[in-house]
Length: 312
Image 1 (cartoon, one colour):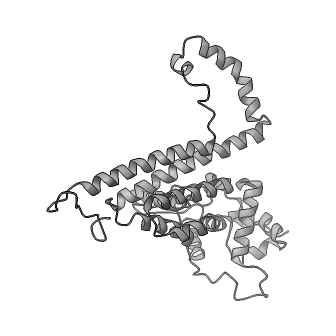
Image 2 (cartoon, rainbow, N blue to C red):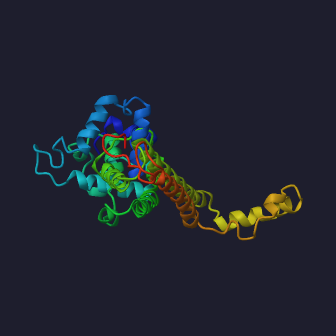
Image 3 (cartoon, one colour):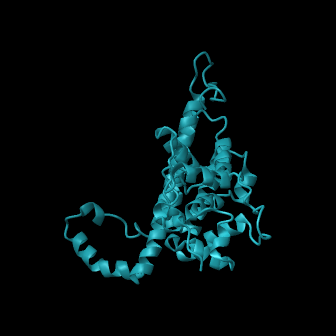
């Protein structure tokens, strides 16, 4: 087997410094981080040159969808990225390697380097690949803001739970590819005309993504804990129950003791829906209040919503 490229051995958690895991909210999250960071992004191992290589691949500027020279290509960049995503989903991010991706495709490892320089760039492509908005969300584009953001949240939940490896990728500084920007575009379009500034719109999307991402992380980690420990959730809590019962009846925790018996029976999706409804209710109230407040020189109740050129 051919010797692996040097970037193959870069730790998985840092190969793609500058990638993001969210859909619309993830793009907004990363964009906000970029602004706070002065717009700089050194990339991970390889610095700016590796960053540029990833961006060129994301935006189709390298021509490597099918190499121009050499033997007739039997692969496409899309096939490589899709195989890498399947590998990460089945075996985890730690298992991702150029060698394993090549084996899954039935080709030699060095064949992959005609399309993508190394694992860092491949991970960047994977992150954007899985962020393609669902057909339902794309078809819903232009509808009312609340139902659109509910679909954005549903897309994000499916994104994280279908691709749990994504939660391990550094999300601090994103490489914004066409798919992540497509989701961001849909969400921003839904907020067009509401009386919020551009910063407030992105802040709302960041809050939405943080909520969904945190809920998905809890679910993924619960599954991981059960797998790694060999102890089911039922066994885990059944073992703790006698200790917790003694603590509660001791009188030391009266407020916990007063909780209804079904307090902890809600599943992860129910908890997420409660948080999502609360977040959107608050945003709705803010929008309604802003819409009904008189603006400078405007009759009562006819304040104009921010638009292009007004900081929206």
